[in-house]
Image (cartoon, rainbow, N blue to C red; front, side, top):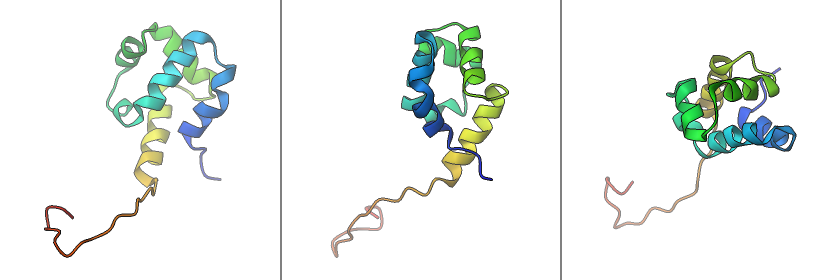
Length: 97
C-alpha cells in the first residue's frame, strides 16, 4: 500500500489539531518544498511555536517524528506528477521553452 500523501493528511486532520499545531500545519502547507531542508528549530521559529509543539504536531498526524515526515514529503514531492499545459509558438526561443 502506498503511503498517504502527507499534504492531504495535514489538510484532512487540520481541524482536529490544537491551535498551535495548526500554525505548524499552515506553515507546512505554504512552504512544503522548503521544509525538506529545514530543522525542527527552523520550523518552530518560522511557525512561531515551540519545538515541543512541532514534535506534538508530527505525533498528532501519526508520524514517528520529523525525519519520518520529511522522508514521506520528499517522496511525495519527488513523484508528484503535476504537469501544466502550455502552448508553443513559432516565435518562441529555446530559452522560452
